[in-house]
Length: 88
Image 1 (cartoon, one colour):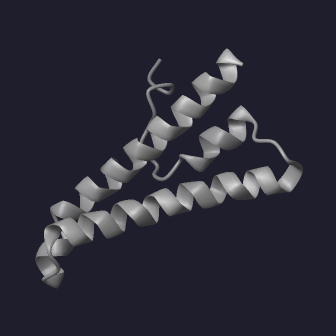
Image 2: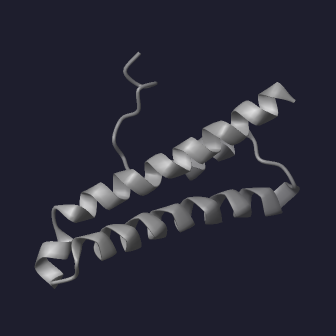
Image 3: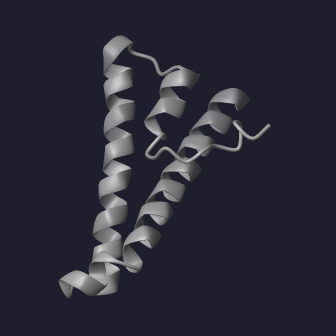
């Protein structure tokens, strides 16, 4: 049970990090160019990134009724930046 709670907590915090990461990327660029208010551009970008991750998790679950750690990690790979695992 504790492992499940830890996994769910990890997924929730990683989804929040995905939202923030993507929203911050937009604040500096697209909102200035398009004339869209900064908060709307950041919200839209964050929601889009979050929806993509949730879609990948749903697809992995629908495939066989469970999500492995590999599928979980793959769902959060949204860019090609090296992870902290690769630096060790």
